[in-house]
Amino acid sequence: MQGGVLSHASRQVFATMRASRIFLGATVVVSVVFLTVTYLEGWFRVSSAVTRAPARTRFLFSAGLDRRTADRAQGTQAGTSAGSAGRRAQEDNAEKIQRDRKTALERVCNVSLPELVPPLSTRQLGHLIVDDEHKMLYCFVPKVACTNWKRVMIKLRHPDIDKPQDISPRDAHETYFLPTLKRYSPEAIQYRLDTYFKFMFVRDPLERLLSAYINKFTMPYNLKFHRLYGTKIISRFRENPSNDSVQRGDDVMFKEFVQYLLDPQAHGPQLNEHWDHYFNLCHPCRIHYDVIGKYETLDQDVNYVLQRAGVANIVQFPPKPKKAQTSTSQLLDEYLDEIGPKEVLRLHNMYILDYLMFNYSLPNFPGER
Image (cartoon, rainbow, N blue to C red; front, side):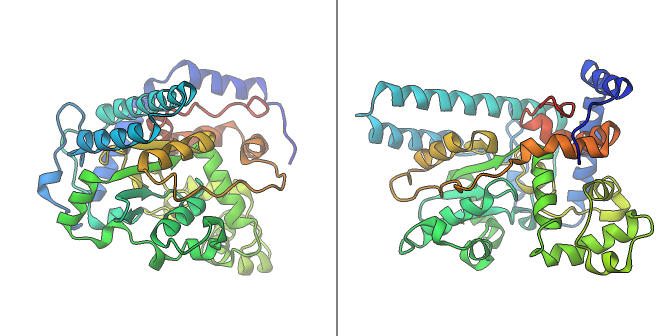
C-alpha cells in the first residue's frame, strides 16, 4: 500500500462533511433508539430502582458518586501533602482533563438518550472487572491497553506475583482470574456501582479498529478469528477467491474487513467485542466513571488512575516494549487511503457515538494526520 493524495472531489466530500454536521443529531438519535429497543427485549433487569437517573444528568448508577470521589480525594491529599508544588499542579491538570472529558460525554448523553432508558441487564456487565479488596471496577475495551490493565488487576488480586508483565497475555485473558460484575446479584451490583472506583480507557475509534484488524487477521497465530470470521469475510466479499483462502481465512484484506463491518446482514446484530462500540461495552451514559482514560495519553492517565485508586504504591503498569515499531496511528493513513473517502465516511458514521462521546475529531485526509 502506498499513501496517496486524495482527488479534489474526495476532498470536497470531507470539506462538506466538516462544514455541515446537521446530520449528526439525527444519526445519534436513530442509533440510540435502535439500541434502546434491542435492550428492552426480554433481558433480566438489574433493578427497577436504578433505571432512573437524576434529571440533571440522566446518568444511571450515579448514587454515591460524590461521597466516593470525596473519599478518594481525601486519601490522595493525605498521601501527597508533602509533595512538591509541581506534583500538585500535575494533579490539578489531570483533574481538569477529567472534568472536560466528562462534560463532553455528559453533553452527548443528555442530548442523545431518551428520558426513559431500559435498565442494564446482568449480561451487559461482563466487561466490568471487579476487585473487591481494593474496591475497583475496570471496564476493559479490547485493543485499548486492556491486556496490561488485566495484568494489573490480576496482580492486585494475587500479591505473590512479582510484576504484572510476568503474566502471559494468554493468562491475562483467562476469565477465571478476574471476576466480572455480571456474576453478582442485583443488590451486589448496585452496591459496587455506587461505591467502587470505576474507570475505563478509550482510543480513536478507527485506530482501534485498525489495531483489531492487524492483530486478528494478519497475525498467523489468530487461527480462531481466521476460522470464525476470515473464511466468511473472504467468501462473501472477495471476487473469485481461491479455495485455499476460503478454507484458511488468513489473508483478509482491510477493505474486505470494512465491507463486512458496513454490512449488517454479514455480521448480524452483535459485533465482536474487538470492534464493538464503547457505549455497548462500557455503557458510559449509564455508569458514571470516576476516570476516563485515553490511549493517546496513556502514561499520564495510567498514573492518575493508580493514584486515585490508592494502589500506586503496590503495583506498576507494565512498561512499553523497547523494540521500535510503526504505530497504528502512523499506519492509519495508508489503510484509509486504500478504502477511499466514501467508506471512511461510512465508518465514521458507524462509530459516530464513540467519536462524539469521547470528543474525537473526524478522520483526516490521508497524509494529514
